[in-house]
Image 1 (cartoon, helix red, strand yellow):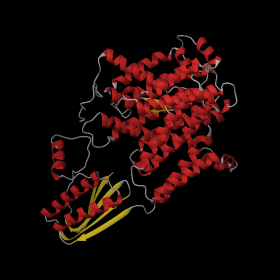
Image 2 (spheres, rainbow, N blue to C red):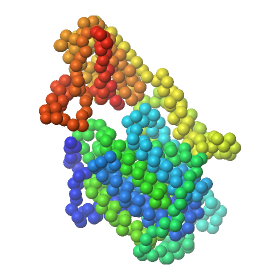
Image 3 (cartoon, rainbow, N blue to C red):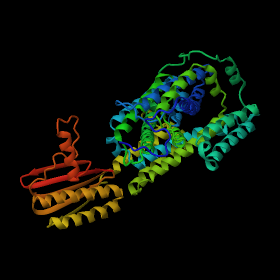
Image 4 (tube, rainbow, N blue to C red):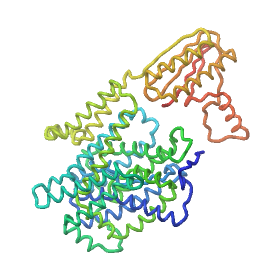
Length: 569
């Protein structure tokens, strides 16, 4: 059971008093609403009408509300059980803009549904996919998504289409001032001002644009014409599919799943003072909920959603991580959704303000990707896995004319920087995995010496291979216990052979000897049903043996005994 941290005012399963719950729900609803600007950007790229944008913002509020509730659920396979609401994510912005420009809004919605389905599939195979997405690959995906977002942001920030117009100078002033406000608060302020710097910067930029007359007249007209209360229109919703953009949305779905894993893990840590390792069940439920939320966004005629790390930071800083807040915020968003006046506010945002906010987000995504990549030692193999695809992806943007002339069969892989860089990185990673497992072995003639020799080998090779210290400590302790059982039960009649191997994910210790098989039938066994005294006997056997591998295999062929202990990193 999780231990309640002392610095939390309202922990994950605690219910704040009604007045405080309303205030906290309103805060989260406001923060979630800011990300609706992503929907507006995509609709502008598709040359959608202002009325369609207003309706999409309203539908987006409803979609976020439902997805927030799903994420906060604790029972059942869906939901992490934490306050980790989704937002309209920058991860999907680059691919969505491309889809809007090439296939219109129907392509955006259809491919968003596809991306949500990708995330749901990833949730089903979360543990097995760790081999395909080590830290270097995961970080590379996050970084390349950040670079793609940065290019979109830079286009809006510079206002290239407005270059040479009478209002271009005002555009640059608004963009520069907005970016300076956001970055200044992030660097030099503290507390909630720092955590909410994006929201404050967007409001500041909008006010400055209004004062300088940089808000288009048609946006004001949309604001005036919008009803105070009305049902959202569904007229803009239609579904299509752009096959050439499937790789880009596939990568975006993978990146969204990886970010959800990171966010839910952080939620677990801030809600448990004795946190030791991630709870895979909660993470899996969180990725399921996130994928369903993204799919729901496509069905509702908006863009893709993903858990918002900034919202988790705000909840931690405020000391209120209660998942009940998600239900309060969802209720308020649904109420806001039926006021087109609120939706029309987002249409007022000029590109200069949007570009500054996106560049800020892109910077954090790029830096976060690099941090993930270097969290493990980057060897020669990973140097090429990261370096070559990075150059290929950037080359796609620099020499885009060359890539557009390639055969049509190659276009799905080469028509975006995102798809080209990530697909090539995954291919290289799988190729370089051949022969990547490191091995070491020893043979001793006395069990008493084996413990010391095996311990020394594990610590020496573990340090050389970059295995985490806690994994090595657990392996050493487990092997000591196993050898102690073998020695005291007089099960061994000959030499002991040991072999260890490591493939960046699993440390395997193999023990072989001549004699009688060590019987530890209950160790690590997970059973759904315990009858009478079974729960006691199985639990006590695990505790007393002191053997705690993640998985154990044992077999005997005559007098030849083999035991394999698996420790997942």
